[in-house]
Length: 334
Image (tube, rainbow, N blue to C red; front, side):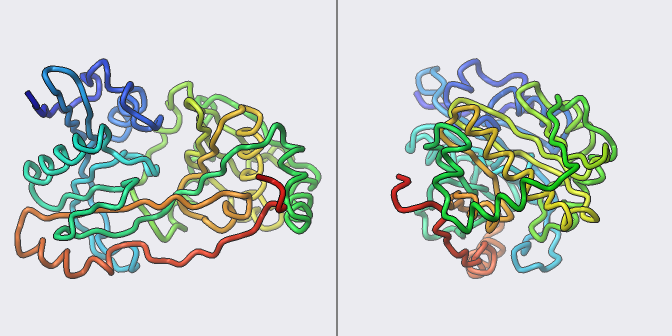
């Protein structure tokens, strides 16, 4: 007997929830943290087949610009199936038939605009509005060391990394996230407000109290913080989560690129299979050897008139930027 149950707190998620997740940001640990420090009407759908847990979905509500990729102010409350923390993981999981049943159930149960965000597979239902969203950039780690990675880069990419790495008076230091400061949060806000593709803005306490699975890397020059990022390891993945930059110092110190290079180093050292750079800033991440993994959205409104409008406008709702590819590694790398 197939049954779907809705709950309103991550603390009550089924004991088998994590056994079905493929991404750290879908886990109970992270969802409990997100609900505590970024409350946005979270609710969770759990699927059971003959009382056995077989899949689930994460949902939250937030006011965002509906036409965000057209850079048009269009604030609208959205009910999003996704992770409430600006990451590329999808918010629904389980076997394909379970996901299909759960998707249909949520579209019927929820009122207003429902958006499935960051879907890994392109939805097949043509009568619903479907489009691309921001892709995520992933580097497959086939390297035994940083030196191995560096040697396999083409010459022009090696020269670029040499210029970035050997600036004097720059330190990269690692801390737990409890060392997160108000200054670092201001640098996060600089990045947030500069971004053209804004989602939810996270608060200071969210960063300060991240689980121990997260690591804070701080870029300092003459003991002054000029940038930072947060990473996490889970199973065979090393994730870039979020970061901050003081843009007054970014150009002269290549702060962003320096931190990006360090993510690759850390991932290789941790012997993971994949380094997930996340979404946005595609070009520098592709130049590090990453490849594009597409993500999709699907939307439906409970009002038939609005739903028809969304379907008619679907080409304008998605992310349609053409991204060039880069031949980063020498021919004999793979």
